Length: 304
Ligand SMILES: *[C@@H]1O[C@H](CO)[C@@H](O)[C@H](O)[C@H]1NC(C)=O
Ligand SMILES: *[C@@H]1O[C@H](CO)[C@@H](O)[C@H](O)[C@H]1NC(C)=O
Ligand SMILES: *[C@@H]1O[C@H](CO)[C@@H](O)[C@H](O)[C@H]1NC(C)=O
Ligand SMILES: *[C@@H]1O[C@H](CO)[C@@H](O)[C@H](O)[C@H]1NC(C)=O
Ligand SMILES: *[C@@H]1O[C@H](CO)[C@@H](O)[C@H](O)[C@H]1NC(C)=O
Ligand SMILES: *[C@@H]1O[C@H](CO)[C@@H](O)[C@H](O)[C@H]1NC(C)=O
Ligand SMILES: *[C@@H]1O[C@H](CO)[C@@H](O)[C@H](O)[C@H]1NC(C)=O
Image (cartoon, rainbow, N blue to C red; front, side, top):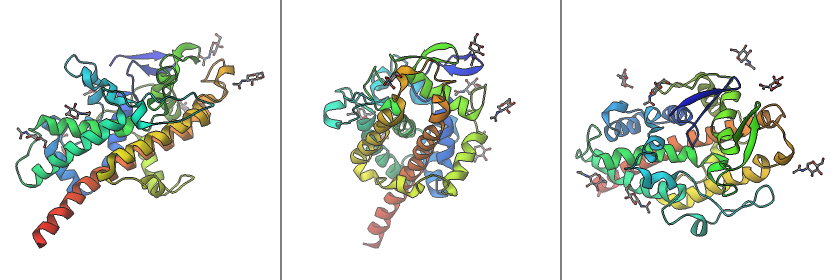
């Protein structure tokens, strides 16, 4: 994706947490994986990623912009019938488009991934040779990030893509402000984050998760992380994400001339940090539950 510098701050043309933010959510999640999960995922991902869901975390955006992968573009969001800041709401059956949405895609790709994990365990899948499986893991990694971004779970102005705002004197739109401008400003960077290893800003979020340095214990973020109820969990996560559109994203925004300098961006930092942290911990836990949960089933079969 083309990167451009705007007003001293970095922006980009991706319509999702910026590519490098997706990489970083993946690197954060890697720190929560068990060694066994890590070894299983290594066999699922195409070899170019060397087993790293961080490196693989941004693939889905590029793919959605190819002719071949265009069908997957609707899977990155859910355009709910809401009207923030006065009305936030998500109704999966009504809001998920017939081409799919982030909620259905998480459920579908999780189900595919289950089969792939079984194939790794029975030795029929090694070295990332089954593309259906590598794609499923890359999509799950990416979509658990997208579903935590408030403007990926809101229908107002097409997820804020058609909601014009000024950021540091530059005319832009709300979606991009949350995908890119605010995270870069929060991390105080003028270059993209690495796509090869964890950046200090995200490493510090991992430390905070481990120290439970959030208003609510991170364990509360994991109330729904059983992959056998994927549709229910993804619906819950998206509903929770959508609430931010009423509680912050569109609050008072009509009166703000520049969201970078009005206090709006700074006020969004804790929300961005929370949502990214939730995404990473949920992703790591989800993958562990998928891999270790299957291991448990196999153990039971062996015992029989
Ligand atoms: C691949 O991953 C392994 C284990 O994480 C690491 O030791 C090795 O340096 C990596 N290789 C490359 C080429 O990144
Ligand atoms: C489920 O995933 C498969 C493989 O990517 C895809 O062909 C299919 O369209 C998906 N179905 C839904 C409902 O998303
Ligand atoms: C790839 O994995 C999928 C999902 O488990 C499976 O349905 C398919 O048969 C596999 N393809 C090959 C060539 O093994
Ligand atoms: C916005 O433009 C004004 C006037 O040119 C300038 O003083 C100010 O520093 C700019 N703000 C930012 C954040 O670039
Ligand atoms: C942001 O980065 C600049 C340049 O590296 C540095 O001078 C400044 O102190 C940093 N600000 C904060 C709040 O960390
Ligand atoms: C990783 O980042 C570098 C530097 O920004 C960029 O040149 C490269 O294309 C990126 N690689 C991928 C796979 O996105
Ligand atoms: C904008 O400011 C006006 C005047 O102060 C106020 O009446 C109005 O409620 C504000 N709107 C929002 C959305 O905050």
